[in-house]
Length: 410
Ligand SMILES: *Cc1c(COP(=O)(O)O)cnc(C)c1O
Image: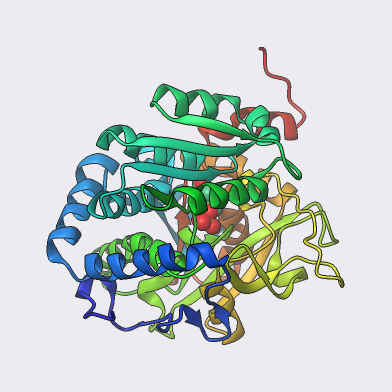
């Protein structure tokens, strides 16, 4: 049932259509057993979206538990160093649990509670989404199971322990490459068996309808805030907004409320990895093709037989073979541009923000910064460049040190 959309969800963009399509992208590619749970979820979500009580409860939790609104920080020293556009950072890194993922975890778990579901499952790669989900489950007293590939569990043992401290059960996944894609498959298997009691919290703007729409709605608070903040600070909109793109949730959140402002350039930055050759990167718009993976139609890294290619990135959060369908839609129509930053440029940008501003960014967010480093000097000092700092880099210090060839004491 399509109901009216409250103003805070920006009624200008009613995509996707009723079948979950963003043009030729998106949709519902799911096993028969999930068709009913997905339809129930869509109906419950559309009701909640139109319900002021739900929206108020969501806003209160964002404010009181997650720490919103986040700062819009004018990075004067970085601006002087790069010598071009005036740079602002949207500080999603200051949120509880360290990244924008908490916005979506709160929204979906609140919805699950309204639907009477007492059990929450989620997949996680690097552990950020698992940590946000575990935290919100602890807050609501809900049972929480996190699926995580065994390889990722080894690489992210600290996050595994954080999730367990907050009461979540972390289930190792030993199939396939034992990473994110395999964890998603296991979470879906669980949901098929337990959908009556269980909600599956997908961590990005990806998957079968209604997930890409729902996650986008929960993340659009980023640009609803940044828009008001920049108008207050500068009396006008930014010239360019930049965000990193894994599945695409922080980027669509950071772009959403600028989509109908053609003078605002929007650029998503993908993981260029070691090089744009198969298996060495995760830049879907640089090396991908149209296809279907894990619930929806979109741009995917695949070989000529349709086999999913391996991916690589210095940041685990951008290391996925497919991109959210809404990004594919706006890319095809030229509204959102895409670029990529390679591992080396990303590590340089990571170090630069630490040194110039005393802010330690996530390696994912450092991809957006790397692109800003390239374009800011080509822009004029009266132009405004807004970079979405999706998360903080504390989780990445070890990995960054190793990648930079420095040895830390154990
Ligand atoms: C997970 C993550 C990302 C990538 O996910 P999106 O859905 O593309 O936003 C980016 N930055 C940080 C800090 C993350 O934790």
